[in-house]
Image 1 (tube, rainbow, N blue to C red):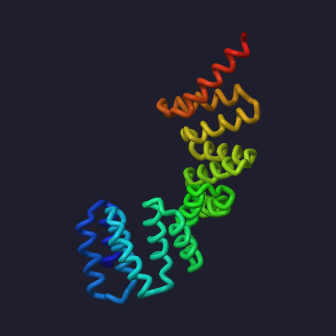
Image 2: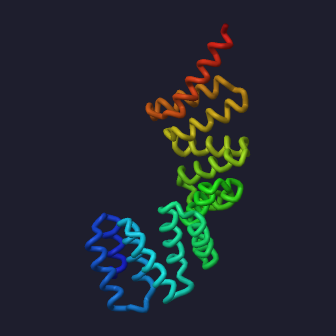
Image 3: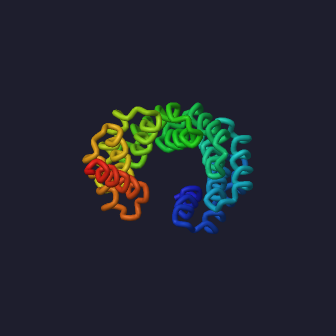
Length: 222
């Protein structure tokens, strides 16, 4: 196992000092290889040392202008600091350079979501879901963007697919409850809110939704 691979394993295990030692050795042994700088940048980002992480990613790009994962790293770094415009630019650059993974499409999608560009986020979140067909959270975020873009029919079927993958997804039930209200199906909405609360008793939004429906039903009974 090479030092980069072992360093990544250490980083995933939270052994940051051990990972730093290995990545530093990689850079010393081959100072013109961008990979060591990218890995060290990812490590520094995990440690919330954004200033130094940015330097390492930029150094990687200086060495290899086609290093897509360096741009992806910068995108994550800016996203973590809520700097969504530069995050978006770097995720797009990573894609232009051929990075074809679910994560980069997902991150660009939620970056656009956070800028309230819901319709623009849709193709990226859809592609992320296609590339990670077993990931219910990616599919849920796609459904959320559909709902935010007012594509409620498609959002409903997407949330139903999420529940098919993970019946215990409380937020999918909550959002189905909201869509049921728009469809004027109060009984179905209440059922979804109850299910969300069964899964997550402290789900405040579901509790408020249930409370409002119960108040409406009480008002109608008068």
